Each structure stands twice: as structure tokens, then as C-alpha cells.
Length: 416
Image 1 (cartoon, rainbow, N blue to C red):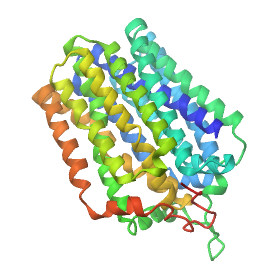
Image 2 (cartoon, rainbow, N blue to C red; image 1 turned 60 degrees about the vertical axis):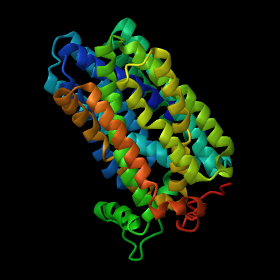
Image 3 (tube, helix red, strand yellow; image 1 turned 90 degrees about the vertical axis):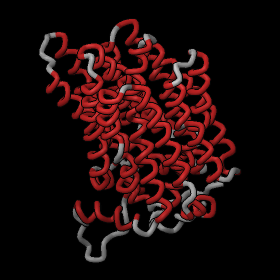
Image 4 (cartoon, rainbow, N blue to C red; image 1 turned 60 degrees about the horizontal axis):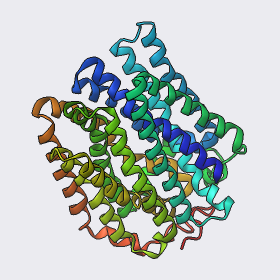
């Protein structure tokens, strides 16, 4: 379990540093919120597409191999950005190509790491909900260290230094997976029962199995639709709205890192609480309470031109609520999705992310920052509030362990 968590931590730390360094680099060199959103879109569109399409490849090739090779590709593409800029060869089209390569490599790499979590939990004899809580803590630590490091690096040494550190993190993550994790990690979990005709299923047949499974899972389908919308809003907030707020208010990249780190530290506390006690709580109540704290208030506090302490407080409270979300989502997914289909189902929740930066940049350019922040807050609140009224959510509490027996290889581990 430790090797998987270390790989997740290093890779996500690099991603978080990049989330500050790349948008700030584009914003200060071009002065355009639209181009900043375009760069974010060109990274996240390939990320989501590759993550959605890579499920059969991850299941067939093995998540360990996919993880270390894609991390190495991400490192090479990220490292090329400052090198080309130093020799005055980095045009905007070339930058778009490089960030698209980063996104296309990160998608399968992140998916592969997610797929390895349940097998690592079984191998370490850790209950599934606790394992997902530990994975959540690791993600939140990365969400704390990455922005703090990214904001400081960008403020002191410039955004290109942050991008270089991002490349180093991706390279280290590749080494951890290739060297620490044993060969075949995740392969047994991903394999399905042998086909009746003895022939291995083709790519499109494997890909279609994920959609066929979702048709019989109303809860998972509702979760995916809701999280797709909130992911879109979060992407717009992180890649465009917060950098524009920092630039227009005069706070600069340091405050981007401070806000994100305040939320990240509180999210670590929330994830630790989820790992220790979430199995004794009503999932549905905790889940929607977490979204209520983590969603709309961040948009509203930036729109209010509040003092720094108030902004940090709102981000901290929101982070604590967000710390409960991923452990619950992961536990529900691991319980209800046959493990051989994990790579083909989970990626669909990222479908809204590429549009976030693109829409955020276009709307800020058209209407200004404050109206967009207020609109984002309203859409976030309505999405999570209205969706929560649907009857499918009752299965979130009833369905603990519902996935046991779905997978021929024991998809679900015992869960408190």
C-alpha cells in the first residue's frame, strides 16, 4: 500500500504545482484570461479523453506498466516547456501541443494508480474504506504541499521553475512505480473471467462493457453526472478564476498557494477523520454536507473582496468538508464496480473538466470576474442540492458491500 500511496503523492504534488505555474506563466506572458483558459482546456481535454479511452488498455496491459511509462512521458513534456522558452522557441501553438501531451499521458497514469488501490488494500489487509481514506489523505497532502510549493516557487523564482519541479515530480513518480511496486501489481484485479469462446475480448468490446454496466447502476450514473458538473466548475475555478482574482486584486501567486494550502491542510484533517470514522457515519448526509461546505462558498468569498483571513477561513472550512468526499466516492465505486471494470467506469466523471478552463476564460473575458464567480456559486449549489433530492442516493447508505460477488476475482474487500 505504501508504494502506491507514495506514487500518488509525488505525481499529484507535481500536478498541483503545475496547476499554479502553467496558468500563471500564460497569464503574465500574454495577459489574456481567454488564452489561459485555452491552455487549461488543451491539457484537460486530452486528459479526460485519454483517461476514458485508456480503461481497456490499463486493464489489459497492467496498471503498473501504464503508470510508470506515462509518468515518464509527462516528465519529458513538462521539462520541454522551460527548455524551449529558454532558447526562445516556445510559441503558443507549441505550448498547446506540450500541455496536450502532458494531459494525454497523465490521464492513463492517474487511472492506473487508482486501479491499484483496492489490490494494495487487500495485500496490506486494510479495510477498503480505510484504504480509500488513506488515499484521500495522500491526495489532500499533495493538494497542500503542491500549491504551497508552487505558489512560493512562482513568486520567488518564476513560473518556469515551478514547471521544472513538476517535471521532476513526474519523473520521481515513474521511478517509484517501476522500482518499488512488484511486477504484475493490479493485473489480477483487472482481469475478468475468461470468455466462453476462449478468445480475448477486443478493445471496443472491453470499452463498451463499462457503459453496459452503468445502465444497471442508477446511483453510479447519478454520481458521475453530478461530479462531471462540479469538476467542470472546479476546473474553471482553479485554472482561470483564482489566477485572475490573484492578478486583479494584487495578491499574486503567493495567495493562490496560501488559499489552496489552507484548504489542503483542512482537507487532510477531513480525510483522516473519514479514514477513522466514515464507516460509522451515514454516507449520504456526510457527502452532501461536504459538498455544501466545499462548493459555492469559495466562489462567493472571492467575489466579496473579503480580507485575507476571511478567504483563508472559507477555504479551510471548505477543505475540511471536501476531505470526506473522495473517500466516500471511492468506497462506493470500489464496492459497486467489478474491479475488472474500474478503469472503464471511473474515468467518465472527468468529462466536464476540459470545458471548465475554456468556459471560465471566455466568460471572464465577456462578463468580468465577479459575475462569473457569482454564477459559478449558484450553479454549484443547485447542482449538488437538487441532485441530492433524487431517490437513487438512498442506495449510498444501503449499498455497503453491494458490489461483493459482482467480480469473479473478489471485487470488494470487507468494509466496516
